Amino acid sequence: MTRTIRLTPAQALVRWLSVQMTEEDERFIEGVWAIFGHGNVAGLGEALHGIGKALPTWRGQNEQTMAHAAIAYAKTKRRRRAHAVTSSIGPGATNLITAAALAHVNRLPVLFIPGDVFANRRPDPVLQQIEDFDDGTVSANDAFRPVVRYFDRIARPEHLLTALPRALSVMTDPANCGPVCLGFCQDVQAEAYDYPESFFEPRVWRIRRPEPDPREVEDVATMIRAAQHPVIISGGGVLYSGAEDVLAAFAERHNIPFVETQAGKGANTWENAFNFGSPGVTGSECANRLCEKSDLVIGVGTRFQDFTTGSWALFKNDRRRLVSINLHGYDATKHGATPVVGDAKVTLEKLSALLKDYKVPAFDAQSRSDWHETVKKVTAAPEVDSTNYLPTDAQVIGAVQRVATKETIVMCAAGTMPGALQVLWQSAKGGYHMEYGYSCMGYEVAGAMGIKLAAPEKEVICFVGDGSYMMANSELTTAVMRRVPFTIVLTDNRGYGCINRLQVECGGAEFNNLYEDSNVEVQPAIDFVNHARSMGAHAEKAASIADLEAKIVAARGRNTPTVIAIDTDPVPGTGAGGHWWDVAVPQAGGPERLERARERYNRNLARQRAFG
Image 1 (cartoon, rainbow, N blue to C red):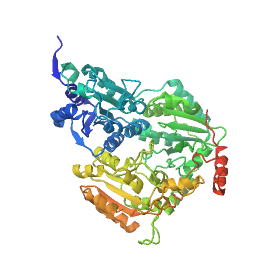
Image 2 (cartoon, one colour; image 1 turned 30 degrees about the horizontal axis):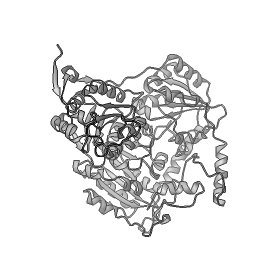
Image 3 (tube, rainbow, N blue to C red; image 1 turned 60 degrees about the horizontal axis):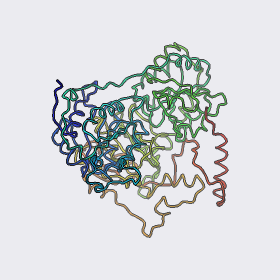
Image 4 (cartoon, rainbow, N blue to C red; image 1 turned 90 degrees about the vertical axis):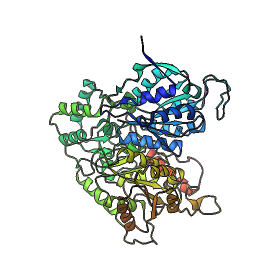
C-alpha cells in the first residue's frame, strides 16, 4: 500500500523543491524571491513561511527586478543552480513577463510561480483577472507562453506530480535550458491532497554532456585541414560547458585564433595570445580583420546574434564557410552551417584528437598588439582632469580597468556601456557578465546583486547609465537590507546617449533622447547621490577620473552597496573598433542628412551575405 502524506499543493511544492539536489549536494533551487498579494499570499506564502530555512524566502521590491536578480544568479552559477520567483495574480504576474523573456533569450533557468485564477471559477471575475471573451481558459499567465521553455497551469493538486519533474528537467537540460512558468491557481494552492511520500524523496539532477555524432566531428576536422584562415567564435555555451581551458588549449595546439561574443567574453583572459577580443558591431579592430579574412568560421556555443556577425556583413571572404558547435540543433544549423550537435567541451576534445598535432598557417599576431595600444590610448585618463571637463565613457572604463583586480567582475546590460565594455574592457578570466541577449534596461542594479549572491568572494562593479538607473533601481534597497555589497558606477549623460548617437548615425534629428532635445519645460537635475543614500546605500559623486579610481578602491571595505555617480559627455562613442549594424534607414523623403545616411546604409547592405 502506498504511504501518503496530507498536504496542501503549496506545501507539497515547496517541500519537493527543497530536496531537488545538484551533484555537489546543494539545492538546485536555492530559494524563492517573493512579493505576496492575493493569488499567492494565503497558500504559497504560508507554505514558504512553514518550510523556513529549508527553502529560504527573500523579499524584493519589484517583481521584474527580483527576477533579474534570480537570472544573474543562475548565469553566474553557469546554470548549475537557480532561484524561483513568485508573484500575485494580475500585474504582479505580468511584471515578470519581461524578465521571463530575458531568461528565455539568454537560455537561463528560472522557475516562475505566479498566482493564477480560481480553478473552480466560483468567484469569477476576481480582482485583477484578465477575461478573454472567447476563451474561458485564458488568464494573464498565458502571456508567459511565448517567453518560457515550459508552461503549465496547476489546476488540480495532483498536477504537481507531473509538472514539477517536467519543470526541473527543462531547467537542467543543457540544450533546452530556460525559464519555466507554473501558473498556480489560488484556490488549488490551499486544497488538501494525499501525496505519495515517495514524491518527496531527495533527487539529484545531473547536467548531461551530449556527445557529438563522430561523422559531424570528422567533417569539421576535414574543413579545418583545408582552411587557410580559420577563426573560432567563442560564445556563452563555452562557459556553461566549462570548456574555457579546453578551448584555449585547442586554439594553441592548432594555431587558430579566437574571438569572444558578449555572452562568451571572459571565458579566457584578454592576455591569452590567441584571444583577439570581440567580433562584430562592437568588436575590436583586430578581431574584425580576422573575421573579414576568415575562410572558416567555427562557432562554439554561440547563436550568431547580429552584433556578433555585423548583421551578417562581417564575413567578407568569398570562400567563407560556417561551422556551428552547439547543444541544440536549432542553433547548430543556422545560416546553412555545418552542424556539430554536442557539448562544447566534449566536442573540442574529440575534434582535437582527430586533428592531432595539425596546425593551420600563421596568423597576424601584430594586429592584436596594435589593438591593445589603441585601447590604452582611448581609455587613458584625460590630460585635463577637472570638474570643468566631462570624461567619455571610454575614459570611465579606463579608470575602472586601472584599479580592477583578477577578482573583479564587471557587469552591465543596456545603453552605451555594453558595447563600450565589449570592445574595450580587458577581462580577467571569469571577470565579465553582460546581459546582451535581451539588452534589458533596468537589469543592472538587481543583476549586480544576483552576481554577488552567487559569487560573494568576488568584487562586483556595475556599470549603469542614468537612463537604466531611472528605470529600475529599487533592489538597491534589497541589497542594503541583505548587506550585499557591490559598486555601481553611474554615468550621467542626462538622457539616452547611446540611442541619441544611433539616431544621428541613421540620419535622424536629435530628438526625444537627451533631456535637452525632449519636449520638456524643465530640464531635470537629478541628484543621484542623495537618491541612493535615501535607499541606504553609500553614495558619492566623483569629481574627476582620478577621483573615480580612488572611490572604487575605497568601496572595497564596505558591507553595503556603493553608488559612485560621475557626469559624462553624451556625444563621443568608444573611439575605436566597431562594425556596421543593420538598423533600417527611411528609404524615402527627408533632408540631406537622411540622404547621406541612406547612401551609407545601401553600401553596407550590399555587403550583407549570410552563409546559407
